[in-house]
Image (cartoon, rainbow, N blue to C red; front, side, top):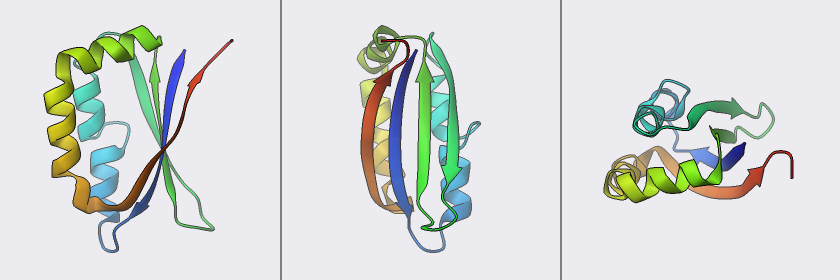
Length: 99
């Protein structure tokens, strides 16, 4: 399995909209679901810091790469559209299970 983990600080007053866009049934998940190999997204919030983390799960790196190849413009446009929901977003890392 292939995991892509992102960390976010949500813009004050935007938590509800952020959850709607980044949650398991959110806008990003709906876009990812257009591709085969997408297994789901988890949205987590740290109680202490208020940081949020998403974990996007794919069957393999190849499935992720095929998604990006087919949907790069939509992916980038959605990122621009939702940019105001966060003050920071950082790719924590890309992880492979069972290596």
